[in-house]
Length: 468
Image (cartoon, rainbow, N blue to C red; front, side, top):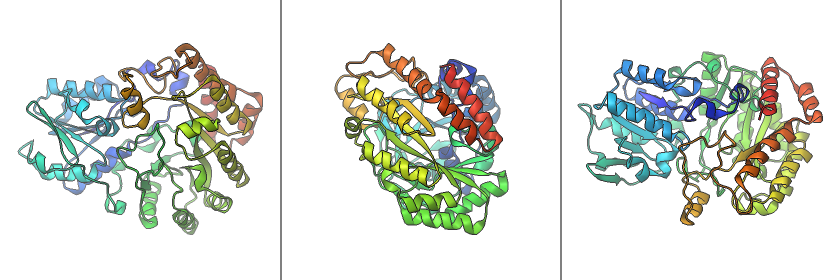
């Protein structure tokens, strides 16, 4: 039984109103879907419970008791780890014979701390597909045996925490079966953020792994830094599946950087046109990876929006973040993208070490001046596995992730020197209001609406921002 726990500790922590909850980005958990596919290929019966679609703890606990699983696997980020612990505690009390596995970014970054809780039998570190296959090859009489020979895991051996050699990254991504979407709720039960979707049903796909960029705020513990790609035929095998089985009309390519290999992107665009699938799609890109001809080709093949990680409107901050880009490069990418007829969605991370009131103001003003279609001012959270987390903890900072982290602006885990929590919290709310509640912006969004999905999303988004 594979479980994707709720993201936040309490329902009210996702926002201060129901309006905010209506614009959360709730997408299928591809990680455990790939793991499920591996297990099914090995002939193992597997089920998935995705709590992200609104399953309460009471509902989850009833489902666990009714399923009688031999093994429970929980995927967890750091913000969701308090919920992973809550689930594991329940299983330990009610089903002490069940083996509990944990995977995901949290255990990959903090294996010792995770296992010291005493709640988990085995932690899967990094990419989990090969490791899971080896683990279940060694599952005999409801026990995992030969753990010392399995790479990519940590586990408890009496009072000792053991951490084996890393598994290494999967070179041939085509060798991994397609994610087991048939074990997930139908796409209609998921909720893409209004900024990223024109048509539903909507599917999320990953066509590559690894990110060669060295950003100080980003964790690369699971997929690593070496870029690996799926082949174009393999990508379209999955695209054809989501179209034929689930009626998908739009795809979001969720790769960290979809445009690393330009030739592959041209090939993907050619294949979209050859197959005449009538799909729209979006992706994420680094600003230095795009040029005019590529963007125009993507537009012709159905792409309508690109999300760029601009991160800041201040060159000094970009240098500190090791983004490898500049404000000028960001402006160039925006210009080229708009000239190609594509929407520009910008991500910014605010409140990292070195941030000042002046740099914060530059960032908001950059988003306004460049007339971005959407801007997200993301509060910095020093997540384990990142360079900034290591630097800050080495300097004596201690972080408590047991409360809401990402979505609640009143919960500030780190405030740069020279700023205070209250002022920074107000900045986060006001930045969104300044950007989204301008009359010129509202009129622009009204006239850009093309589908009912967009209309609904824009209305929900307006009220969510208004009530911050």
